[in-house]
Length: 411
Image 1 (cartoon, rainbow, N blue to C red):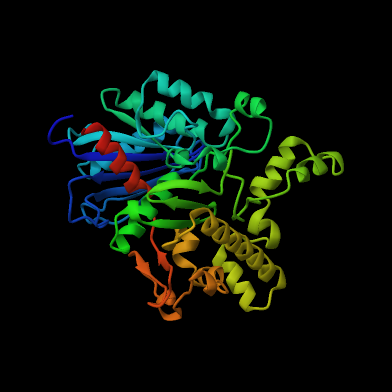
Image 2: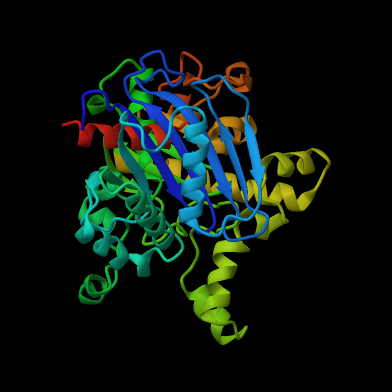
């Protein structure tokens, strides 16, 4: 890497999409306030369809968002289209200032506990984990292979969603099933959203003016996918998602915690196939299964109009949140802060208020006026007298991936 190579391109490849950000890791006057400036952001949607769309915003040049529509056949064509947009702003993929490409990879199993430079052996291991992440790892692999083909000379780094959670002790990570069976099939709690939980737990400590090693935080990552984590002194000791991202909190379309025997019942009594049960629990459950909507704003609007199904869905969602706050308070022993993040956590004040309502004996409370403030900055929403801080901390998974990537290739 040359001394002038200070940029990192972050890629998040989905099955039919490609999200990207280009960051300058030396721009201390950044819009992130964290030593990295965003030069461009964008998204390619509906890859492989005739109506593909690329949305590109050149932040460094102060330009306007550009949208183009038309067929984009595959991820290689998508990345080439992204490269063309970046080149139009003088930020092309062939720039000598590009230090590395950082890839979000959902599942790293137990082998990958930190960011890793990708080679053929790493690719094979990510591919070996496809059975435990069939919806995510194949798409991540496609993005990696595409980027390596276009820039084989450039370091490509995998940053794993599961890595932050590999510090969980065995008693938290293991399920109570036959050990030989579990080990043979790699069945255990892995956890996900790790880059978000790592970033938010660290930022929460900064907000409190403390070293992360001194702080115990419950992080609530509440988006369409939702997860909780118990972070003790900067290390994850428990998390709500498990072998897959299906376990845990009520989510937009996923059920979260459920009696495993429900799946047997659906197969035996309802005659559903394994694939049908999979689709039910992952895509037709959660909030959308309960009330037909997975947008919290729409659910709150319906509640205000007296919709009982929406109100019940909200109550179930909040009940599960409270259970995890209570459980992780017990796991941690001492809680310094509860941090809300991601789309719902950052923007839905009623969710934050309801989640801690009635938990005053645990030291939790929300100040109504502080909670109502909308801001893109980390902030406390608890009253001064509260024993446990309640915070809203906007997540930045792309920045976390970029920082971990740059630290690895510049070491």
